Each structure stands twice: as C-alpha cells, then as structure tokens.
Amino acid sequence: MSEKLKDLLLKTLAPRSNKCPVEWIGENARQPDGSRYSWNWAHVMKEVVHSVNDVPETTLVTIPQFAKTSTAMAMMQYFAWADPAQPIMAVTTNDKKIKEMRDLQIINRLEHMPDFKPYIPPPHRLNKNVLNILMSPLVLASGQSTGDAKSTPVKYLFGDECDEWRKYKGSAKNVKTAFSKQSSNVTEENIFDLFSRRTNSYSKKGARKFWYSTPSVKSNYISKSYELGDQSEYYLKCPCCNDFILPEISDFEWEGKLITGEYDDDILRESASIKCIKCEGFITKKN
Image (cartoon, rainbow, N blue to C red; front, top):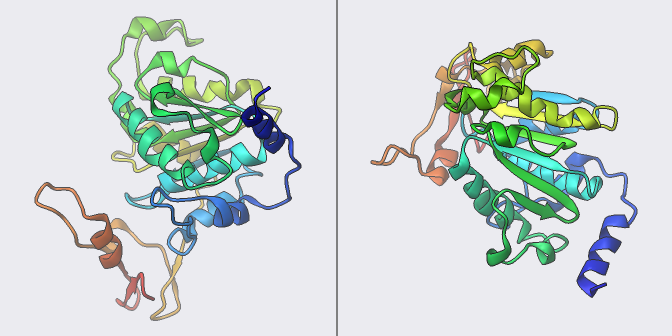
C-alpha cells in the first residue's frame, strides 16, 4: 500500500469532531480564490446549512447571485469530511456546465484546502463525470441527460439551477421505461423524479437532497417543489428603521453591467442595495 493511500485511509477513518456544518464550513471551506467561506455575505444560507443534518430535502428559491452554488460547494466539502466514502451527486444544467463546475467551482476550492489538495488527480487523469473528494466519489451529472439520471445511487444529491433542466430535449424513447406510468413525454418533472430516485438506496441511512435555483416561471418543478415544503421565507432587518422586511426583486438595485450584458461581480457586490419598503432607507453591504 502506498504512503499516499495509507495517509488517505487514516484521514478517512479518523474520528470526526462534533462540529456543526456551519462551524466546520466557516473554519475550513474555501472559495475559488482561496479565501474562507464567509457567513457575513451569505447569512441567509447559514440558516439553510444549520438545518441540513435534520431536514432530508431542501428546496431553495432565490434571486440570482445569492451564494446558492457557493454554499452547495461548501456543503459538499463538509459531507465528504463528516461522512467519508459516501457517494455525492451534483447535477447542473448541461455538459458544458459540468466541466465548469468541476474545474472552476470544485477543484479551485479543493486546491486551497490542505487536507483535500493532495488527492486531486493530475489534469491528464481527471474523469469528466467523477471526482473523488477524499474518499467520497462525487458524480457530476447533466440535468438534460436521462443516462446520468439513472446512474449510481448516491447519499447526497445537489441540484444546481434546476430551472434550466426544463429545457431538456432528449429522446422520449430513452425515458419511457424509466417511469412507472410509462409516460412518453419528456418533461422537467420526469427528470427531477429520476434524479430524486438516486437517493432511494440511502433513504433510511440519512440521505439528503438539496435543490436550488432561480425560477423563471412559476409553473416549473422547482417552484412546485418549494410549494410542497414549509415555504419558509427569510426576512431582513432594516438598519435604518429596525423593522423586518421581505424584499421583492423590485426592491434591489445594483450596478456593474458590462457592454457584453454580463456583470462585473466585484462592482455588483459593492453596489448592491435593497430599498426598505417601510422607511425607504437602503440596506447595503456596509450597513
């Protein structure tokens, strides 16, 4: 047995502390630039992560640029550390996004984590759809592929930007035998159901599902999934009037739009503000 494998086994089998996920992520998780994951700009996500060990399925519906993906990446790191050797699946919108997620979202973060970095395979040995985080296999899948949806059973399932999955235009023939109702119509709900079943083998062993997206229409499955939950909403405390408000998208203001139509992330974060519907003051990053 090689020293590297022996070291990995020792780390995997080492007793875990009783740190809650919020505490562990705050101390250990990293952003792609190497900075620590900060709850200061993701305080809404802190409430979500607090409940992850108790809630078997979470559906998170927010506006864009709300740290959903960053939080999901941090949770994957946590599960790989806290529950080693258990399979994880991350589903994103298409094959192009799979490579972006692997290289820019996952590997970039692991490279800044001393316990994880030594076990990242070299570029020529990278598998397109599978990446090990310590001893936990992370399966990367496309929400537009029924083949991916019928793949390996997993304990932890993350659905990234699920709203985009409804654009699936695959072969109905491939899907037909996958459903108990034998429906020949390929729909977003079919794809959701297929991926959701990946955790069935772990249903009595602490399986967790985490769906997150910015819905573009109310009739899609991510919105329906949210309506089936407790529909908890996060209220912000206005620093100007000390009242609690539930912001709407029309209350947000930001700058940083480029000629290309995309946004400069740094300018967007610095300029973003929320107008209080009660006192008309502004909630900014500074206050």
